[in-house]
Amino acid sequence: MSVQDQTGKGSWPQLRVEDWQGTRDTVQLWTQIVGKVRTAHAPMLNHWWQVPLYVTPRGLATHSIPHPSGPFDMEFDFFDHRLAIRSGNGSVASVGLDAKSTSEFYAETMAAPAGLGLETTIRAVPVEVDPAIPFAEDSVHNSYDAAAVQLFWRQRVQADRILDTFRSSFRGKVRPVHHYWGTMDLACTRFSGRAAPRHAGAHQTSRNGSWRRATRTN
Image (cartoon, rainbow, N blue to C red; front, side, top):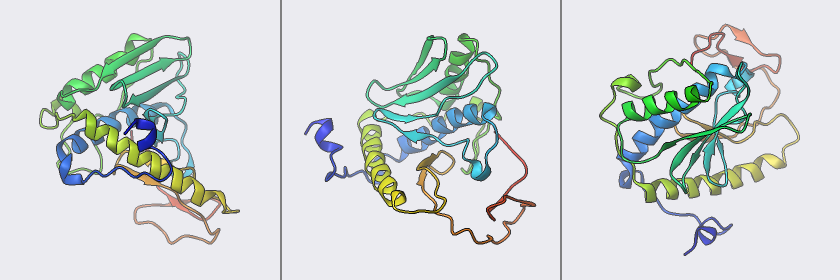
């Protein structure tokens, strides 16, 4: 079956968590590194809409990231199995996606944009995982099953299509379909306009009634 067939409207590739657990945990951390690069530069938006990744025809990507040296973006390409870093001046760098430690991936991913004049500093510790091993010290997560990763992306394509259709008929405020790298989730929220209950630890509310934390971490 071709890739086109497997990403068709009626096809949902099967991939159980237990069949790619090591790769899943590794890729989650790698997406966190890229997500944190975006977070380091993108201006704050309510609901943290400036931090997610997005499903693309080849994998997962940031939107355009502002930088003092010019805009750039980053895309996980699950066909060529590389992380592409593309600068607004036409320069391109890449990091191979293969079986390597998270510490290696972190070092390569921070060096690649720096080589294009796009230096970035992030808080180099993962979030929403336990244990939270600093990226530069993580030799535990080092799996990359290319076939499983592509199946994961094909599932994401289908879920993104369904959620996009779901959101299209709502006339109120609705978020775009976002891949949140902290928990490896696709999210799409519709807002009623009613005041939301106060979130523990939050002390600021946006005008549409939803709470958000007033602090920012990347």
